[in-house]
Image (cartoon, rainbow over all chains, first blue to last red; front, top):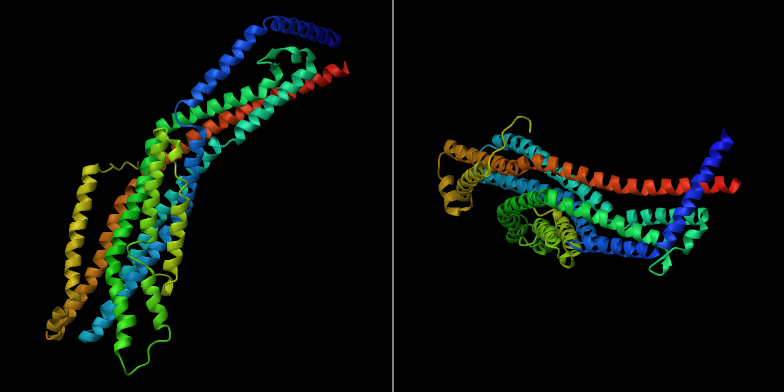
Length: 327
Length: 124
């Protein structure tokens, strides 16, 4: 039984050899076919956004979403510190008016409960940013060169195995090269075209979702910046008055040892530019990147590196102010 | 969607405007305390009245925080739906990635098969 099946296999191989012979006769057809396939695949990949543009967009998204949780941490710290400054101011007012401070303890508890609630809300925004990061990571993986290279290597392996199996295959030529040499580049072009088609379809189907996700983060940053600015002007004046002006005009006592340091720290941060305003700018750049991708203007995609460095620098500058942030 | 009806854009805008209006009123009331004349006048009032005004100021502060939380909640409320859509977008990308991985796997399998055939033939 065994020898019969082997004989049958040999017959099949003989048949394959005959087919190869036929192929050799039809070299011209194969040449035209290869050129056509390469041309069609190449053209289809050229229309619309390129894969490397998707990769660049994904990288800018990863950079942005890595920074986002830090911005929320900053915003929360700022808000709590601003409220603490407000409560300290209220305490001073109570002393000045000669009223009871009983309600101060009550308000502290009520405000802390509200801040716990706010922390939960900001944590949801952080989770959303982390989900966005997962999205950009998968997008970067799909748009990476890695899978094309792997498919190319696998095709090269097939070609080399076929050469060892049927050595005559080396004599079949297309585009002045042995046909087996074209396996790898053609496979790479085909996989690249397939990948690009997936990415374009994905952009059509889910582009709006990504736009909305960035928009939601932007909306939250805009709201938090508004809250910060409303509290800031007041808190800034309050701190200048309490920690700088008050000890200065009191000539009987010595100035606190860190008075000059505190003054510099207060002046070193500008309320006009905070990590939140920088984050808003980053969301706008990311949306612009998505727009550039959809409009096939890949060369205008911004890496977002400057915005991210700026957010980091501002978080650091604000962190140097007493108590971690401006009071 | 948890069976909840999502508010329309108009309803959201209306809620946003109402919160903003209430916030402005509270901020206006709070601003009185920055006025030296107001403090001077208050100092002259009876202790009970001063206490009432001070307690009210503290309540205003807490209510402002409540309004801010409500404003934040309006944005957060839209996050859930978007997160679901994002998850579906991730699945879509994952499927495409899987297809590409399968292409490579099939090519690798063909290569391995050819290698086995080649070895068998060499043995024969």
